[in-house]
Amino acid sequence: AAPADLALLRAFRKALPRVADETFGLALSLIGAHQRRIALADLSEGLEDGWLLLSLSAPPLARAGVLMDPVLVSALVQHQTLGAVAKEISPDRRLTGTDAALAAPLIDDLLKKLRGATPYAALRVERRMPDVRSLLLPFDAESYLRAELTVDVAVGMHQGRMIFLLPDAPPPE
Image 1: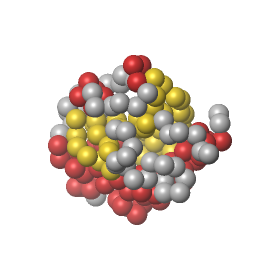
Image 2: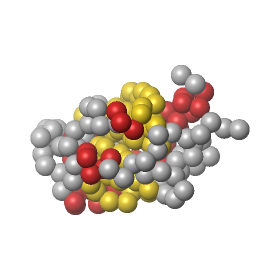
Image 3: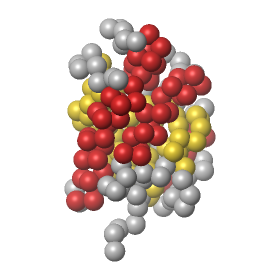
Image 4: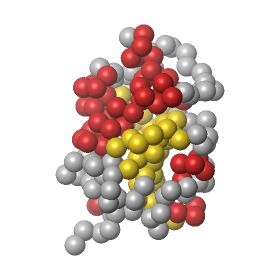
């Protein structure tokens, strides 16, 4: 991978545990990450509607998005509402607007922590989207970085996933 590509994944690895602890008091760590450039036409491959879909924006960047699987979202919600993460989490639970509101601060704070390491620090959660098609419809960059993160929740209690769809940044001059 190119050094610029590794910088984004390294930034996620450093920022996620700190943000989860500061924002929620929850132990999250990045245990797997990979990234690839993908054309806009191929962006929907492998994306699922059952996940939490959040639109990201920050002019002048092109639209972006993040998908969070139900296990990760449920763990965040349980920790915030019950003070603990349950041993059993259903991966089939339907996610709601309340789930989006409780999960969005993690994404916003995570992106803020990327300041200096990537051009994506200005992105913020704009709104929850109902399906993958609606999420991708306003995307207009030629290519995107698809960063897939596997997250350890509560020191081995669960594993969740996040997929960031970020407009491919121009190479540094």
